[in-house]
Image (cartoon, rainbow, N blue to C red; front, side):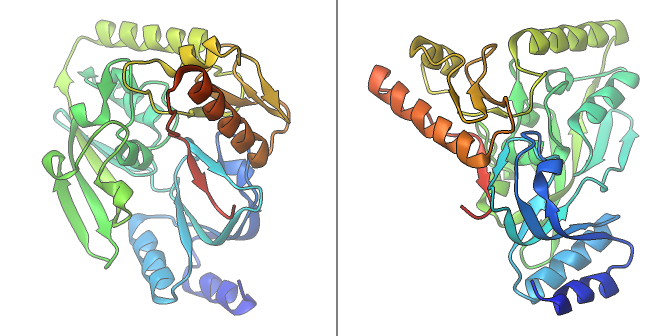
Length: 302
């Protein structure tokens, strides 16, 4: 990136936080990732749209960053502009409908629902990530998915038009949605919940939190589940049955607690993680004839 472009960003968007060569490991749940040429954090949706329009106009490469979960950023980082959405975190409620901007953390969304005695989002308690990422991936756990309580979303198209889509428009599937085509960016989403019993909601959320801490490596940095669940199998069992529990390459390790996770055990690099992913896929394919499809997204310059 030239100094002129950086200066132009600073002049055009004085309310945004603009950083140069910012290490992305500070913003990912894996605590891994090289620098972004330009790292910009818009203060509201209007400013984000202005920044996005400018990036498109200048034909600059860009990446939209949420809470940094479910991604693995290259050790070389990301060329171009990384737009950090975490400051877009307005959350409102009307009756039984919660409206959340894309940067709202799922944990904050679920806690707000509990505070209002609204049920339907308990499954999402403890899932790392933001609303934008959760809608994009149709995040789910413990028998629930975002699509189950999703009502609508405001999206920004590549042409700069703000459109509203209902659940039937979103092409929701297992860990997928229409957002993954790359033609839209989530600005905000609404969730239709129902009135429930506060004690029951609290008990269910506490139960799921306990299960996560017992079964998942919450105490170490990771990107979440590495692989999609193959039909008819459980990823963790396949990996474990290949005697890969605790297997380590560099600083990356298959979790001793849950073999479907890779953890940053000791200052792992992105190359450590991808090497371990490929080794695991090859081992499971050889041992059981099952192809593990990666759920973790690779981002940046590889």
